[in-house]
Length: 252
Image (tube, rainbow, N blue to C red):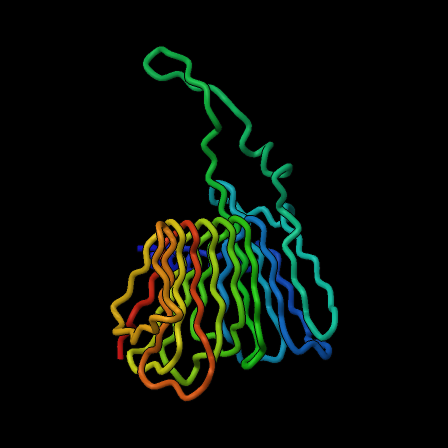
């Protein structure tokens, strides 16, 4: 259901080109990309061009509000850094002012009930290493060859690989309060480490568990092991201290 909702939102976003804020960012010698989002959900795909494209969408009750969005772009040590600086909480508060309504003759107090959605839709060149951090937003990534790290505070992290040839040797996926959901091809050969403190670890893979690297104590649970027959020292790490970790077997 989560993927279905995210996909439907992205399809809806396709009708908003020209009403959203879009940046086309030349690499200018940058060899990697780091994204930082505050409120936005983030979706990343690979494009055919040699620039990074970032579409920043803010909808308030279905109406695009690009004037409330802002991205800060900097370059440091070969890293192209894109940071969401607006909307801020202060900007959104006036949109959610408390109001009143009358129900069955009684005055009821509450928020104005506006639906606020904010998203970053990012397209990156083939082979560009990417890392990402979010505070409130969810993350949705498919077949990103050079994905390195995703760190979310409150949002969920959903990553899908449909072909093991596209899978990086090492990925670190983390959400403090949300779920981490990783789907891999059934013929994947890799080492994995799944960790939670107050959630659950769920998989339909047959993991060859390493008892020395695994631990179960009180609420803490960590499973380390291998899928298939890995020939490198790469590691796929999924951590969700207060959420669930899903390691899913994709279609083959």
